[in-house]
Image (cartoon, rainbow, N blue to C red; front, top):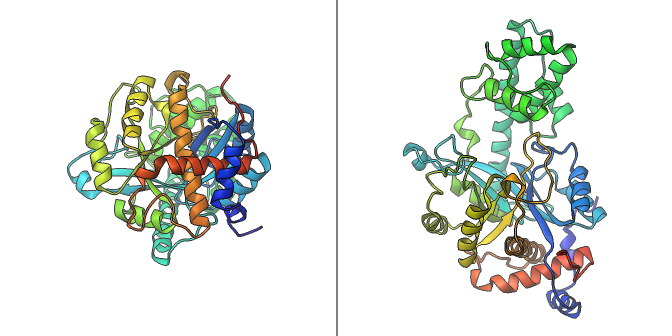
Length: 419
């Protein structure tokens, strides 16, 4: 496989801009800038499934966004070329802000104070990264697998107590259900499948789940894959569960270290926003959007991403409108990092569609990332300057260049996507 960035074969900047101007009016393309693949954990059985769904749903820009790894990039770019869908190259981390943890401040993990999810947007493809940053990346990959290996061992001990008649090995689970990273959700899936294969009747399955859950009845229907796996994870693998293993502090990088890895890989640090949950609650860190904006800028973060499927439309619109007024780089996605296979087209909670303003803003964010990827691949400075600050005053020009880059790739300049 060609180990050179796809953007190195693109025309020069001026030619790209001239081409899109010649094509006439520019239209917004539909984007999903954040989804996970089987290289971390995913609702998709294979990356190509996401592309097939995207094609069917009219999505023309997709962003891979796996935890701790860029191992899926090669397959992702090949499929992007096959399906004529523009690729965005991203990564996700769990970091820890110890000062906020000590103060009990919940950031973008509602259950764990101080824990902070961070994404890196628009990384180099294939990944080019400094030695120190690579060492940090490998450290969190290794620690994550050590934790899940210990979970498998604890689960096996519990299964032996229950006389389950089956057990697992880390290598077996990784080979069957994962790629290079085995995660909690893989273990939950493997256990659900094993129970289905071991017991024939509903009564036997329910009885075993009750033992597994230390006397608690299973709540989900036995054909509800997502519900069962979530119950397994919550009852066995989380705090208090028989197979729970606390994360080693070495499994968490600081926010500054995560930024170092992202910047070294040519990417843009991006804060994933939770916003309102199903009960309308916000975390301590996010309850005031003005304070959040000031905090992110103080930490050198000029990009946010949202998963609108967990937010109500009015809350999302208010938040995004404010951050857009500050020329923040904003992207939207679906995650797809649970067993639930939802549509790949981005929408708000209860299936409420994004309006044309939000789709425009999401497309602008994708365009900026496309321009950034193109410029960095060709040896130029991207959307961040040498100090890591965003070129927010050049927002519009980056959108213009990125639209030209995307249009060159998909070869369908000026396609109308609104009815």
